[in-house]
Length: 86
Image (cartoon, rainbow, N blue to C red):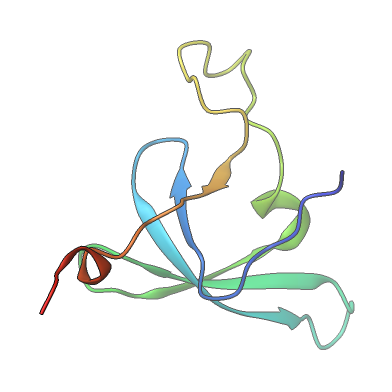
């Protein structure tokens, strides 16, 4: 199954920080597909990365102690609001 990027999904980078995918875009000259994502820490700045890089596997030869398979992995974050009763 081919992986896809979920817009507004929260992703964990293999080094531990979290990011929010804002949108997908395309490089105006090369037509390369890009992921536009926001840091969920610090100043909340935006970053752009080629989709192939965003979806790539971690280089486990370079990072042998990393347990995460992919560079960015979608997180399943449940709402706590649903747990409250009126």
